[in-house]
Length: 252
Image (tube, rainbow, N blue to C red; front, side, top):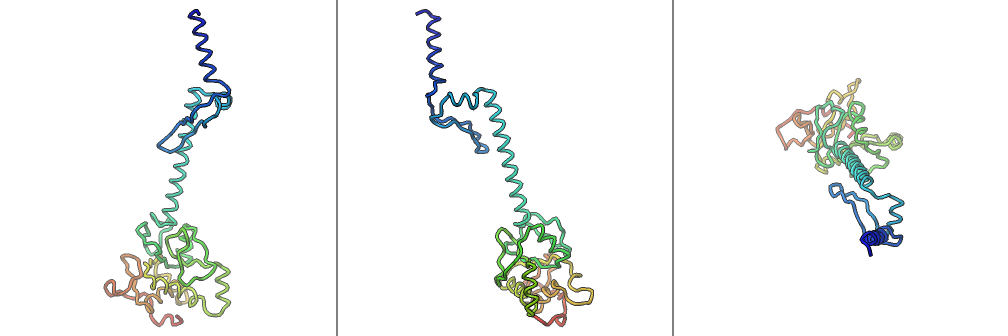
């Protein structure tokens, strides 16, 4: 056999082995361990089918590698943005876009289940919107924090609000009052998010926010700490002045 024929014979054998229709091989992976993303050639897949599907060559593999890397970075960025957004708002990280009129700065150091009290039109409506806080459609007197949230806010649905108004029992005494009582009995932090100018309306009567502060002061013995912007029991600090008069509200 001449040398040229020998080379042709060897080449034919090699080509038959590499591109035979029934030739099989072990699984091969192009792995990107940093992002844990890979594509693979499955076991027992034929080279003939592979040749038709991907036309294997260096250029293709380079393009595939760049595509997978791009997809991995994009997915990671989306995940990081989502985690950051949820952590900053629903879980109390960072601070709210709306600056509380009380001057309170609510950050990731806030405890799970912290109660936020204040004026609805001035502050709470904005905070509820930022947190995407769910509506309460049924009263549970333990007032649990909704799943996925960090703070405890009173966000009653319109239907439930109307139901309590029609009952004749007084909305505050049936809802806000027990909510404040739950904060005290559970030993939760109570952060004031509104300026105390919102305690009274134009007629000089206590607002809903004002009634909550009044209940904390004259039923539970709490006082406002201007340093922390929190309502605290008097035995946790020096004697602090009350923000409401005991005679302002008697229907507790």
